[in-house]
Length: 560
Image (tube, rainbow, N blue to C red; front, side, top):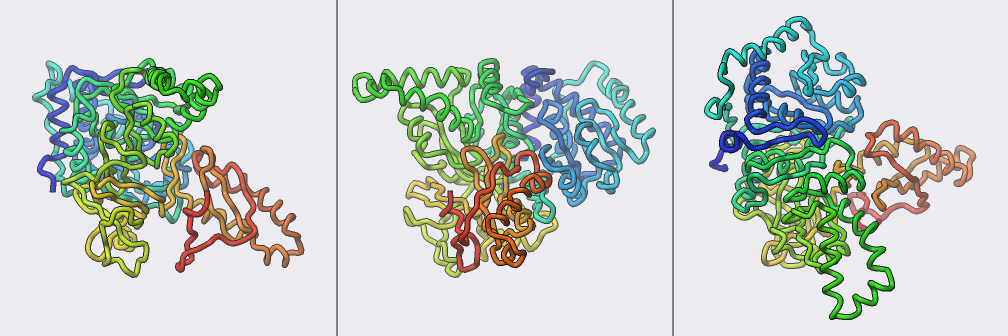
């Protein structure tokens, strides 16, 4: 158990950095740490009026804003459990998550609530617009409205000279208790609520903070969804515990929008997913590198370094020009891209983690990053081992370099399990207490991890969303005349390779071509059931079954 309490770390930082900028909307309001604390306190007054108790759950759904961050912080510093929900989840799936989480109160934006209904979340008695502190729905509308209106008056009575740093006193949820309930998916029947304790996040912070990954007074540009643990831990917990200024983009991070934002914000550290750098490499750098003039210059050692320095300078300026390193996570970085960036001396590093570890498992600073690796295991807070692929020999676990197997971990960051799901929780751990990541990889003698394939098959959406292809495949399997399918990410687009059930097609009196034409026509129907980031762009025909394991699971790593 980590000695430092996660809420205490935040509280101390808020007091210490009172007059510094804390969170800002890219196009909108700025909050200093002091102003953020005032807004948090007003939410606390409302929560108290509503009778919320320590341990109660509060759901939060909406686009990332400074106000989203403040509501999130208000919930956990009051002593409640936050349930962040990605805004892209279909309404039906979001309501299912809210109900399953046992949340008593919901903070949401009006546009998202307009697609839901009180009947879909019967346990919720109050729905609030967290942006404007307004009532969207309440079983006792007038009473809730009065409680909200009374907040400012009560705040003024409590702090007649304004709130001061010494007035900040939060409930320190014990590190052993649940702090964040994060759902890995919104698809009905597959949602798993990962129970993350204060200790899980504290384990991340006590590893990162002494390494000055993010420093006081520095700037971050947050463009990854904070409802995901990767962005939440770094852009919210680590940044605000370090006295950093977080500028929240709050819009789809297209290359054009990001390019302008980087130059405006000029962040000191860039927290990204591989897709951002891969697009820059593919769309900007590759055309330069393939030009006859540059190819000739690269063939001459005396000119090669000059070319590399110029490319590095241009790339750095395009990302704001003031960053110390770029931290990539969420998925594996394309080896070709990684090799080129390392060759030109670009300060990049790749980390590895998962929601169940809040999220860090391995990390290393840019100057020590090894090509194709995802950093070193977070010693002494985390341990990792490579288990043989044969599940019947789990006891035969080795640390042999280049041995490919499942990465298994244990330590401070490992979650408490899945909420109200004892079977999935039990399957998450081995008999001797190690957590199964479901990812295949190797570990060298220096404890650097190398991902060789994701057996869980999670994909990363264009804006950092976690995409679980098995769940989409389950929906595809319900389409007429489909035998099996495999969902893949190709050049940033989701595609489904489908094996038709030829026997059923023949029994229906159709040719394979006719049956395939029918299946293709159902793609729009499928997409209606999926979130905006999960929609399938293309169906590809495959006439032979996929190669499978003895357990009849598709060997995903064989297909690209």
